[in-house]
Image (cartoon, rainbow, N blue to C red; front, side, top):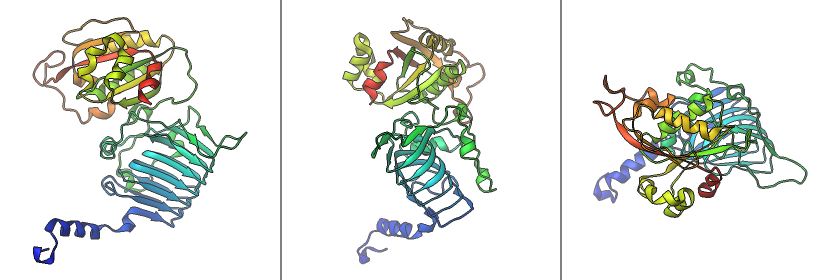
Length: 375
């Protein structure tokens, strides 16, 4: 549009883009006995509406702004990362898997939800709502979490707030620990949606599968804190894989920014050593539980870093483990390996060609500190 019309070209472009958005592309309404969905890239951060659907399987394999689900019955629903809120209203007998910033349920009954939620989930005037930990993988999912501004380590799936509790009644509970997600949310059966390469195996899940508020099996717990770096997420996932393989339980995870006063409380007399590292970005905290967990966790960390160029001092488990340079490709999580370029031949241990090494510090501290500085 010319300047004579009083509008800039950018305004005209925005108007054309707005006109190109068809609301029907961002809703499912009035469906019955259908399998429908949206492939990666088809929602691209827009709002979405699901309403008046019955006995449908609905899959949104993309990130979105907000999603509202109204008046749905006996549906299976998968939602990729939602930057804002997911709001269920007047729904019943639905099974869901989803990730979001905020999760709300009102006037619903009998929902089973595998959830990743950055804030405390809220139910209101609802009954028989059951929760489990989100576990899902497809190649685009990790990038969609980033696009939605969600951390895979901030998941309050079991920390439910009932806004309308009834004395003597329990309106929500946790799904059985051995619940298998694809028994609740089966994979899609249409040719179009089967093009998405999905895995529901816990060890491939983009979001770490945690125990949440389930009762701990042991009185022994430890917390591992990983400082920010290029491969912090991969390091965390590798450590989780190793610890779970040994039979330990991952209770909860957090990704948070620590201030100087937080460092003083957590690291005490060693705090000054870590202030510069804390300025590089958020830390990732992992809480593990099980008999001998502190000792065995230290052994796992030592094993992970055994091919380092240099091994610096290793203190007692209640103190700080400092690991020297290491090869990042040895610490890639399973979900990241297919996207990671292998180093050049002969670059397996030190600082050889093609091998990107860096220094990583891990701290083992008392588990009580997890609640202290991350809530």
